[in-house]
Image (tube, rainbow, N blue to C red; front, side, top):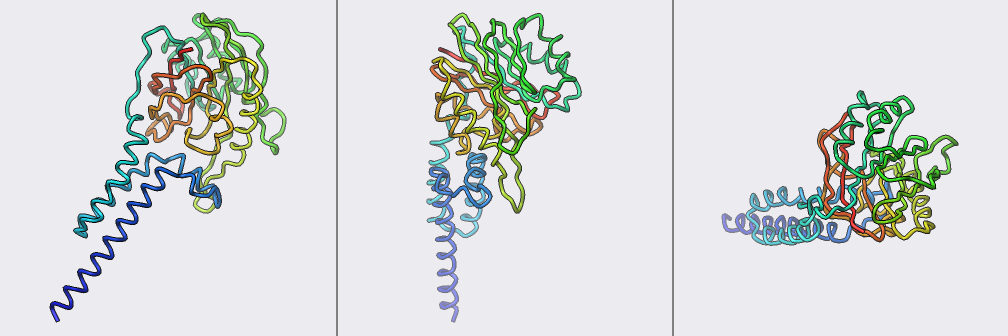
Length: 319
C-alpha cells in the first residue's frame, strides 16, 4: 500500500511539474509573440504589449513553484522565458547615455493640467539644456508661467490648444494637427506641427498628445479613441514632405503596443532603453515618446520629477 501511495504521489508530482513546464513555455511564447493574443475582448493584446516587460515577473513565481514541487523539468523549462526576456529586454536595461557629439537634445513632458507649480516645472525643463522642449496638458492658466520661465533661453515658441513647443532655434510653418476622434467636438486641440531651423538643417517637429486609455476589470483596455488619434497622427506623418522629422508627445502607451503601429511604422527605431516615465511616483512604463525619422534617437533618459504625474524624458537626436 505504501508503494502504491508513493507511486500515486510521484505521478501527481510529475503532472504538476508538467503543468509548470507548460506555463514556462506559455510565458516564453507570449514574450516572443504577443501578437498572438487577439485584440478583443478588452483589447487584451494591447494591454499585454503595454506592460510586456513585466511579464518577466512570472519567472520568479514559477521558479518558486518548481522548487516546491521539486520538478527538475519545470526548472529547466524556466530557461525558455529567461532567454526570451533577456533577448528582448536585456538591452533596454542600459541607455547609450547622453551623446557627446553635439547632437540635438530634446525634452518631452506632460506637465499635468493640475500641476501645482508650473513655473518650477518650466524652470526644471529649461535646466535640461535642450534645444527643443515639448509639453502637453498646458493650460491657459499655466501658459504665462511657462512663457516667463522659458523666454530667456527659448525665444521661439508655439502653442496649439494644450500642447506647446519651445525652441532655441527659429520656428516656422506652425499649424494645428487635428487628432480628434470622431466623437470629440471642436476645441479638442492636442497636436501641432512646426519647422525648426537647426544648425543641421530644417526639421519638421510634431508635438502630440493622444487620448488617455483606461483599464477596467470588465472592460479591459479602453483605447479606441487613442487608436483613432494614432491613425490620424500616422496619416499626418505619412504626408509630411520634409525628410527629417521629430515626434515628441505623450502617446499614452509604450512603443510595443500595436495600437501605435500607424505611428511607429513611419519612424526609425529609437534607443531601446526603458526610461520609464509614468506614473512619476513609481514609473512602470514609458508612455512619453521621442521618435525621429531620417535620424537616430540616442541616450533616452527620464529626468527628475516635477509637479506632474509624468516624468520628463530627454534624448539626443543625431541626423
